[in-house]
Figure 1: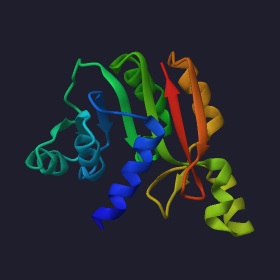
Figure 2: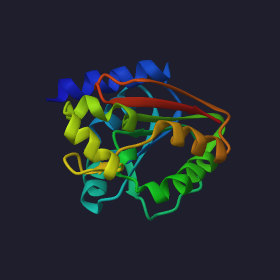
Figure 3: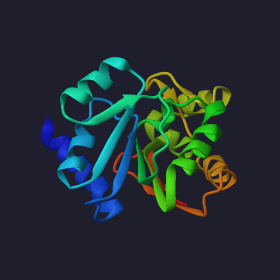
Figure 4: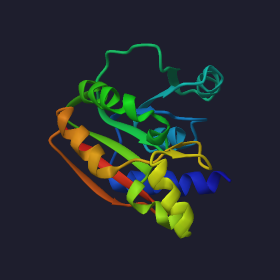
Length: 183
């Protein structure tokens, strides 16, 4: 199982380039498998998580970690939010993007990876009736436990938060997208 995470983290590192020596914040780090690979690649990485149990687990693995409710004033070269942005309620996304903007150093980057793209939802449901159903309830993904993200709206929110520009491209998951945002 660890090989899968090493490969996945390696793909994220390819997207970001050389991360050795960069200060990185893994926001929504989960159990830290991706965080650990970034650490092994030479990044000065810290992790934030919403579950206290996971914060404790990250600390036991030697990763600097804290709960999302704890405020930090450090600045980062990169903020990574891997496979977690869709858990943020749509009403809270704009505030979170503003927070990320202020946590990034000038020229910093924000990688929102593996975002379930609302415009690709037909690839997940593969059924006209289910896809039509998402038009009635366009945000919540009941089978996935989060919300679909409208990338067009997200790009507007990114610019409103002060970011200079963003690049999006397909994820290796057929209904998801990556968004790399530049300060």
